Image 1 (cartoon, one colour):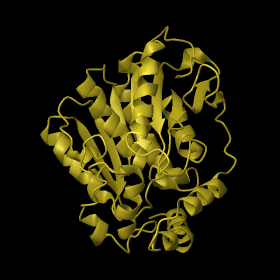
Image 2 (tube, helix red, strand yellow):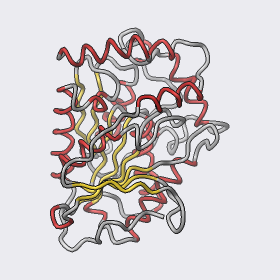
Image 3 (cartoon, helix red, strand yellow):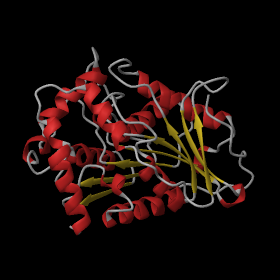
Length: 316
């Protein structure tokens, strides 16, 4: 563990984990915390950021990170941010998204999907499917496209892959999942075994937080908790998780079941890091290395294609 990672863990244990120890999850406090965490993040050199507010002919909200010189990039990524389905936003996840997009040379649409509890399942999934289908309608070849996400967004990205396959849609080239939350029934063994080791969450908070998005649905619905899905026919997956996070089993069990179904899976378990440590780039060196690995995976599986639709065609 680097000294930078040790500091990140200490800060989380001091300021974030005490909130998850409380008997009730507060949506308002979580959203307030996320808003204070948003800091100025510079757009990578040679790239431009366009915020889509959902007005006009683009009702889906989010952020495009696009190259200024379009000829230098021919891949596309649809990114789903984490935050338990009830807080955070594309803005809170810019360090991760900017870092991954620039490394992978991939234009990226970071989706601002509807949040629970105001919009429970399947609202977030519906938004991801609509954005993906809009990308295809605008001329993005599926073989040049990757769906990625972290935490709840990682589970959402995986659920979208399952739903797209079941609907007969063309599938993207790959999926990238950072510390994915794939089991909203909260049955993973590491929810207990890593309780106290995870610098960010206590184990009991997982089941409490799940209720916001689950609503009245069955938490084992595979479009809600993709751990329970049939993974056959899915594209290659990269999964990265920390050895000490309570959601580790959500990643390991998906990797095992997907591999058994014949899916190409790369599971990386990084030692003693915070949940979605990638957000700490560029401060934490392990975050930079993990994003380097993810970018390599994206470049390997997503095809470049000259003459792809010019950027600026916003999902709607």
